[in-house]
Image (cartoon, rainbow, N blue to C red; front, side, top):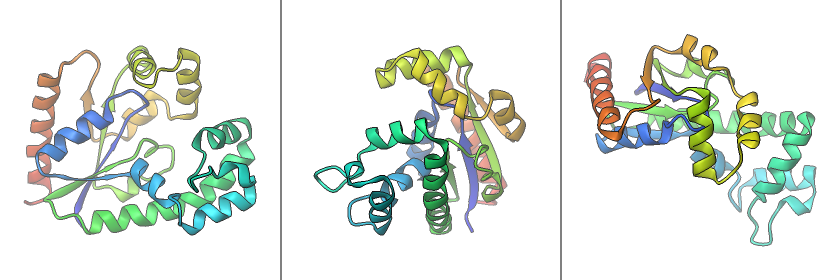
Length: 200
């Protein structure tokens, strides 16, 4: 198994920016969000099960999942959310493990927004938390997703608290008011540390 660094952080913390900087250094990125989209792609058997449970209207005309409608449904009804998680999480976990095993870099990054919430820290040799204050998270997410603060706060309420994430961290990358040059320097420092830890 490739030495695996789990990367997590709340919405708008800058996980993707950090992961992309590691990718530029030649590190394989295994992204849970990408895998989550792949397992419900048109033609995947899971999609039929979702359509059968939620009704045909959750499948768009092009055969893809109607994400906006699904998001509405599972936010309104926790039973729906639990059903969907029970279906998807084992598949996503399995694919993440396979991709980490097949990674051809000194170590790999496993980027999981809900790493702490879904108790996936046991899949990692080390946990890196990209940290930002709630105010920074809200401001960034509103800008990026063209949404409003109330929506972002509702999403944040479903995620682990900042304290819970920091308690699970081996390493913390502070991403509050730093520019890209500073973040790059922090990533480079961590990269050197992970190369040593992985025995590369």
